[in-house]
Length: 304
Image 1 (cartoon, rainbow, N blue to C red):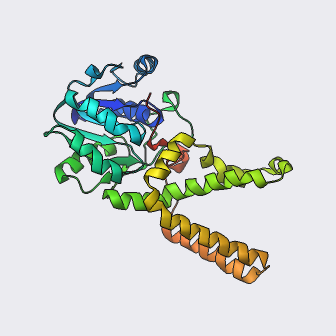
Image 2: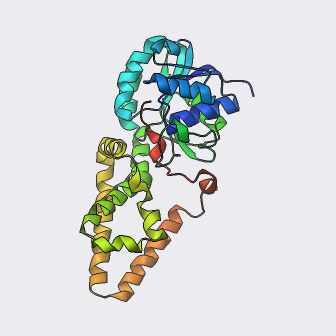
Image 3: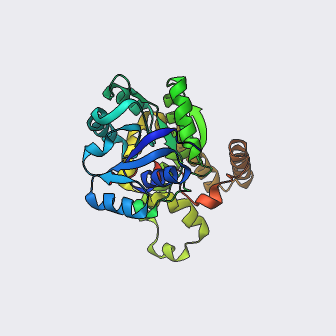
């Protein structure tokens, strides 16, 4: 396959950024793959591992970049893009891996030179693990990747082709709709898992001896990076208000029927819950076993 871009530069070589770089090299998505890093140690590690052709802490490594991938926490992206913009090639494209799209769609385009364009993206792949040492070229294989459908169609087509070349399954959504839907599918489950883990302060100390697979499965995503998730939840706070209220209402409903010992009503509640899940997710994710990943932790890795 001929490379679609002359030079791809990734900013932020954490789990997801490192995986993007590895996959881009493996699949020939660009003639050269570079990285702009915060730490010289990370730059050396990336080169030694073969994740990139070049890496540096100096922004001069960005020269000639015609595809820039921002893989840092979302609150740092405007500052980083403002510094990177003067070094981009003419007609460069910029994409990202941010978990919240509305705020970036409003902010990032205005930081670019007139010939450069931004097309937001959000690959739903990752793990509660972090860092370049856990990156792998197949992390995106089969994973959904949401691309902003509101951008210029020609630019959307090129960014879509890029993510598909890395193995992702692209889904088009406008930024606002993305935030609403991902709020339900990813952000609320994380919030609920964190809330449950926080409530464990009220549990008997001896209860930890009884932990089984159900506890581990439910609490796995509550092991994710608190700093990252505080940023994500607050950035998407408006979209989360309604679904979190709906979950709270349903919890109160379940608590009431269980406390009353109303088995028949509780059974109907649980059966309806299972039916709702089946309607939303009628078939297993074919990539789940190979990725063994947390579908959201990835999105904004540490800027390394």
